[in-house]
Length: 181
Image 1 (cartoon, helix red, strand yellow):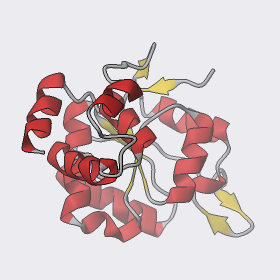
Image 2 (cartoon, rainbow, N blue to C red):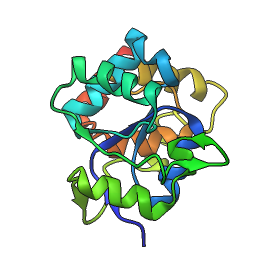
Image 3 (cartoon, rainbow, N blue to C red):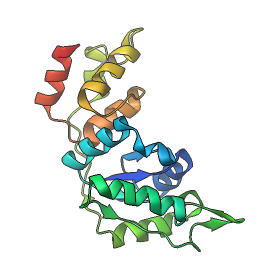
């Protein structure tokens, strides 16, 4: 059984997400490299930090270090997870996506991640269906607006449910966003 990580893990790209998901059960924010400078990305990271805490896991190269430094300007208390260049290199390509699950788990443990015994499930798919956030022709638009109101970004139904539970979105926050719909 995979370890459940409380904090939200910040990575550079979609291949990094795949590698981290192979290692642990965690919510992940992809910053798309230097697109991290977008205001909306920083806002998503801010919400994640306030609700669950964040761990930065970027590539062990110059660009990864620059992205890490940029995030730390806004969130100096963020935890850092590092993989070595050797662990992240495959066929002259350097990145988190090349690391083994063991290397990623080791990096997260050294960052002193918080393990959760069990994922909090305050929301269910049935609940989202009852509200029309899943299963209707307008669901996508509603989820997009709710994601904006809650600061968690757009997601498909399954990802939206995961974010609600992992980001620690309170019922009060959720209901306030619902009223705005």
